[in-house]
Image (tube, rainbow, N blue to C red):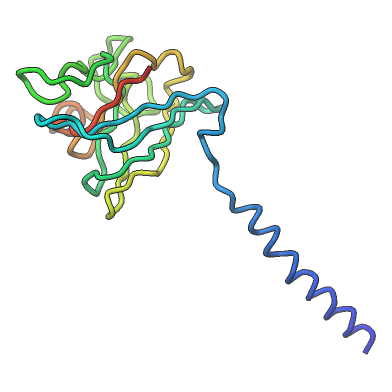
Length: 185
């Protein structure tokens, strides 16, 4: 009987303590808590004027730069996501966001490729996932990018379509038109 009582007491103590431990383990990482970060305000592009849709927080980690989107009001699905050459999201006669220039390619590779290889643009990022509610909050890792300073004075672009990480069958991954943009300061 004494063994049963001790076992029951141990089980009760575990049942009480476990939720407290589990609750502590489920705290989400908050990139805003990082001392060194860049917060990029992002706007949905429109000829009628840009509409703020949230921020992307960029932080450095041991594997490269991590991009933490906190965005809303986007079309669900996968979208091309890139660092573009110029720090400008403006409109030109060619279209919305065209002042941003092309994908950032300081090594002049001339190729669109995977975010983790050295064969393509340095600005090639993993695709941005937007859920069915139009919210993007899944972070992406850019291992080609190593410092916050190297992405400053560029634009962060979200394209209408997805990205196949090649120039075939469509150029620049087939992402198409520019949908949303923010200047990385």
